[in-house]
Image (cartoon, rainbow over all chains, first blue to last red):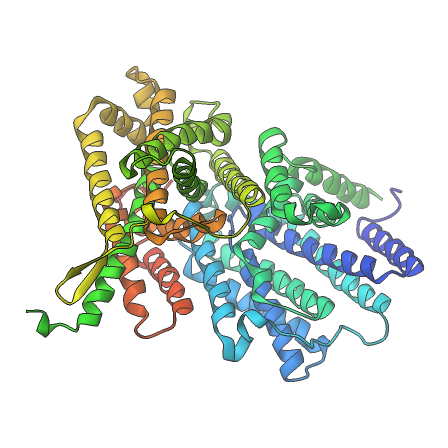
Length: 315
Length: 307
């Protein structure tokens, strides 16, 4: 296994999964898989912002929602192709994220969390009430799928985007730049003393994280082909945060594990339908209480990734 | 005299004042807990909701006089506060050294645990009683209009006004005129210092939670008696508004939170002249962001060094 570099392994894993799902050929499984991948992206991007850079965000669903609505509106109203809506959705969400970070660049700790909560609620209220533009609570239907070829190709495309974002995030987190972000989390004043600009780092990390959240939103819009404001409420932000906490703050594979757990568990236990948020809350509480480092803690994640790096350098 | 005013406008102002006082009622307990522990208690909105349900239960089971309902709810609030502290906050208060008190990780852990507890409580209630609104029996409903010339106020609004005033005065008396209040202020000022002068910090924190939650629960039933609707999600929206008021007021200033809450209520009521009900929600978030941008320590916050 050690001959495989760290980026080929997720590629192989997803390829096997795709073939397996293609062989099973069940549209329900496709839906489930794309949902898990979308939430994986969301959790991974929230992990970059909250886990690595230490900026507690309570409004991640806003950026996800802005991305989803951008893609939905462009594709249903203006017949843009998904190849265009995807990056545009990312860019709109990144703009909003950058703006948020620029406005809140001086806020620390709970103040930042409150500000993002405010932004999240503001976006939700806007989506709900701007009926002329977003169709309000009725939501947007008739969103084109990613590809008209087959559901399997669609899932493959979602996987491709997921993979690209995963690699981008992984390279970012495990680089000197990632170390700067971790320093920002630990002590802002020290970061400034080292000659780095904390405000700039914050804006950059929010732009990158929200770009990915926007992409996830676009993927969601194109794969479910229906969006409504209800998908982007405060509880969704909390679910994303819970995924990151369960996986272990700061750990990228952990965030994705958390996303898998929290999307698949309520789906697999169908009878738990009404209990979804209850499950989310209880799991979150249990982890904070008994396993605060999460499933795959940051330290162990870092150790694994860095040992790979060392092995690569030596070979 | 009233000819000079637009009656409708004054009526709107009155309604806004009542709504603002509802936010203030919740914000008072919220701010008290934040001031002492320096952590956000996200479950306060759920205490408010549980207070309303406790009152409903008392009415349905015992059918006591209205005054006794308030006392029963206050008792329930005390118990809930102690429970909440035990479950969501105590486990993360294991260390008493300088580093762990300032540690971001511990602060985030309590924020997340109170968030988790609030979700669990809300969802359990929803499973147990259903998501629908429960109505207060007619006899207890405080909807009788009181005419003041061309204006009218509901008796529930008067109750809200009186309760808010009473709570505020009592709390200020408690904080500044009693020994317990002195200890609470000592703990909120410097936990380690309080520990060193022999204050039982644990007891003070429990007492703070009990008082704060008592106020939260009472506000729940007061609002429930006025609006007549009690449902598991009822704590969410006013809870967030109270949160906004707390941040605007400067996080640990109780008068600041009350004034900000009233401003919020007034702004929302006045905004309905220009925009629809749904959009008026946006006003409070806009106010929140503006406050955070221009007054990062809040409108009435202490000018202290950031840590």
